[in-house]
Each structure stands twice: as structure tokens, then as C-alpha cells.
Length: 451
Ligand code: AMP
Ligand code: ZN
Image (tube, rainbow, N blue to C red; front, side, top):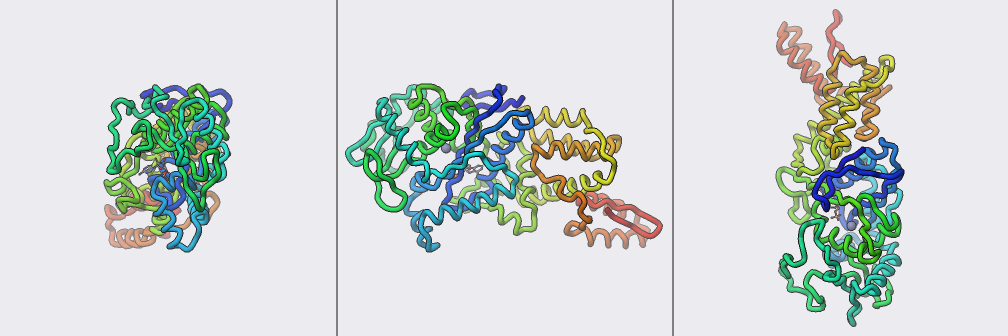
């Protein structure tokens, strides 16, 4: 069974699921495109799901859509301005980016969660949760219509990130501490406002804070016990600390069993973030002629708890491997089927169970690819079996007439010339280069052929 790193426990823990695992992933903020950094986090959630499902565990997944709340945290003016520039309402803008997010995750073979609630359509449970927190003395409402969480009523605050309350410095940002708060680390559960995307509440018209959205949707769609809660590493604090405080304070028990965080993606050595202008979208990758699943492949080449510095070279290399594997799988499919290579598959699966050691899994596949002692049919079955977890569409080329990958035509011509000139060393070198692209060259009395 899967062992995975639990941020709060600060160690790798053995999951002990019953027949079902309830899993919540903090979803996208839909006022802009998700970049490939964001997508790394959603592929992580998908991988966890697939590893568990291979162990016959049913996964009930919820991934929300943040179409209100965090939008405003990130600067409502920016969102409204963006909507104006694009000539749409904020709601239309959110629907547009939700659709592009769905297209991106589909292209990455991320299985859709059972529940994908929009925050804007889940305001009722949020209001109920806030009311429960006020009633239990964990939150206070102010005359201006705002409601704050009273963090000092939750003594174990900080267990996920290690940011204990007494050590938190007030106003580490530029803006001064909001004078309405009883304590500098309290946060808004409800914010008074008028206009688009606001609702009536017992405290007046307004909208919910981002943190309370996730607590309310997780409790509403998964119930009072959540086995796994996932997100990018930046969400540890304050988002997940605040979520934990709200959910636990409202229910009176520890709601989330394990908190799992994926490390960040860098691109060309810099953090991928819109604020730094260092953003690569999945559409940029496909526009460069690469398969979207090359991105998934590049993710799998690294462990989720390590920063991954992506470059165009890494992506191109991942794309080549992907195409080569598909070509090999199609070629093996021509041979009679044979039972899986049990020892290889067992090692590859053990690596997945070992806190998702995907690079080790891919190493086993590379080994198997070259192992001529394993019958082609067995290599085929092993690759297809493991692809259920890897999600790389490795069977895509089966039955398809082989198509030369980009650049291979020129290499074949060079090789024909090298052979004609008797330059066997160069011909061998080119054969290897072609093999890297997934093209197998054979020499026949009629000249070279390829498959
Ligand atoms: P957001 O839409 O900004 O709320 O982010 C969606 C998810 O992407 C969250 O889980 C973030 O932690 C995660 N995330 C943001 N930036 C990166 C990055 N550079 N690498 C990996 N994950 C990220
Ligand atoms: Zn969340």
C-alpha cells in the first residue's frame, strides 16, 4: 500500500485506507490560465488517485473551482479590470478559464474528480460553516458586516507549516494590521461588499474568504473525515493552516488525516509565477510541436517533493522518450502477447508505493525497454499495465501506420549517404540517433528500412 509524506506528521506514513479514500485538492483560481506549475500539482493528485486505484481502493475526489474569494484576495480590481478589458462579466471570465483548465487537465490525462464544486455555487454551506464558528465562539462578526476567525481560540494552529502563533510576526507585509482584528493573524471569513458575485448573509451582503471556501466544500462533498488533502507547497501557510483551524473548530475533531504537498515547478531556474512574468502554459508546449503528455512525462521524471526546474530541453527530451515508447509499444504489439515481466513490474510498483518514486519507476521501464531477454509481448503487457498509473497513452500508436517523427527523415537520408560512402561509423551513430527518436533502422540487401 502507498506510503506518502504527511506534511503535518513530518514523515512518510503508510496509508491505511478502508475501501474508500476521500481526497480533496485545492482547485484552480479561474481568472487566468493555469500554468504548467499549477498543473504539476493537479497531476500529483491524479497520480495519488491512480496509485490507490491500482490497489483496488475506491477514491472519492473533490477539487473545487475558486471563482470567488481568492479572486478578490488577489486583487478584485485586477479581476474586474481583466473582465472589462475582455468585455465580459467576472462570472463569464471565470467560466472561460474554468473551461481552459478542464481542457488542460484532460490533455494531461488527469481524471476528473467526482465533485468539482464552484465556490460561487457553494456559498450556502460556507455561510452555515461561518455561522457555526460564530456560535461556537471561534469567530466574531463586526458591525461593518465582516466576520473574522479568532485564531487564538484554536491552540494547535500552525501544526502543518510549523508557523506557531506566538512566533508569527504581525504585518510582515507592507500593509498595516487591519485594526478590526482582535489579533493580527485572524483572517476574514466573510467580507462586506456589493455588486457582482456577492450574496446576502446573516451579516449582510458580501462574499466569503478563500480559506473558508475550501473547508466548507470539503465538508459538504466529502463529509467530516477527509483522508488526504493536497495542494502546492505554497498553500501550507496560511491557506491550509486556516482551513484546518476552521474545519476542526467547527466539527470538534481533526478532519484531515494527511496533508500532502507538491513542490514547486521552476522554469529556466526561476519560480513560475504570473507576478514574475515567468509563465509557460500548456498551449505554449503544444504550439512548440510537443505532445502535452511530454509535460506529464517530465513531471514523472522527478519526485513530487523536489523542486523541478523545467527547461525547453527537458520538455523536448521527455517528448522524444514518449514518442519512442509509443513506437516500441506499437512494435511489440505485433508479437504474440506474453505474461508481464513480473519482477520488473513488481519493482516499478514498489517504487510508486514508496512515496511516489516515479523516477525509479521510469528507470525500470527503460531497463525493460532494452532487455532483449524479455519477449516483446511481455514488454508490451508490462508497459500497458504500468501506463494505467503513469497515464502517458503509451498504446496510442498501436495499429497505426508508423509515421516518421520530426527530423528523422533527414537522419535517414544522411545515413543512406554515409552507407553509400562506406562510412560505417557514421551510419552506426545515425542508427543510434534514430533509435533515440523511436525509429528502428534495419539494413537489407535493398537498402535501409525503418519501423
Ligand atoms: P492557484 O490557482 O494560484 O490557487 O494555484 C493552484 C495550485 O497550483 C495550488 O495548489 C498552488 O499551490 C499550485 N502552484 C502555484 N504555483 C506553482 C508552481 N510554480 N509549481 C507548482 N505548483 C504551483
Ligand atoms: Zn484550499
